[in-house]
Length: 321
Image (cartoon, rainbow, N blue to C red):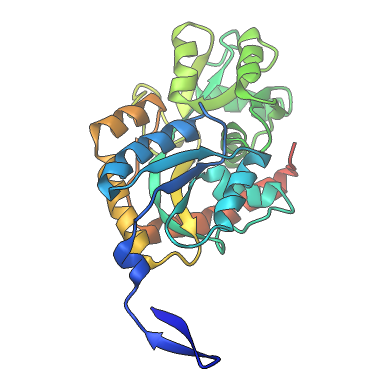
């Protein structure tokens, strides 16, 4: 690293060891969750923060900064000093989907962040109102193909996880099911169980309790392999679309320009945290499967997901609510 010193009115560049890296961390670290308390993002962020703090020797404080589909908190991290003291709990929406949803997104997920690492993948369950006759994904797809636009699915809003998973499902199977966006998941599920809409997707902890109560029928999961928390459910790939693998994901990122030594230390401690029983239990509660990896692998994921979702969202003509 080179540091600038003012000598006789001129700026001299002197080679020096990275003091920031040697001393980091020497004060509390903020982990910004760009959604309200209680959401899955918040739960996962707090689980990771609780484990990182003793490993790093400094507090890791979760700060909720909701707004604009996660853009408010994400922008705050993108604009923060790249010193390792401000981190983002990002996910498929904030770091991939939002680019296509919000035409004036105030940050670029590829240019403005230094990926630290993936935390988890969340297989989604495709579920329907049980009064419908479909017992499996094939019968659902066959009916939807013969009756385009007759069925309706709900989500927590444009660009939500349920929305983008279903967009991918419809594109892969070549069927048309109408999207009904809601201002939150609770009302969407209430209307689904009442039969006002026909289908949705969601994480195992969200959907499967309603399935066990007989209020919904689960047909399959969106992940490439069966979900550990619902192994009885077949995958979309097994049944109607070979190779299909769509899972919402979560990861941590820092502002672009954060020193590589800090990124590597954070990645190592985060991967170790994912192996802790307390984190494993919290992930299971959220229907999430741990996905430790390298900063480079997480960067490659983001770089591939941005154009992937951009194409699907443009084809579907989706805009922000």
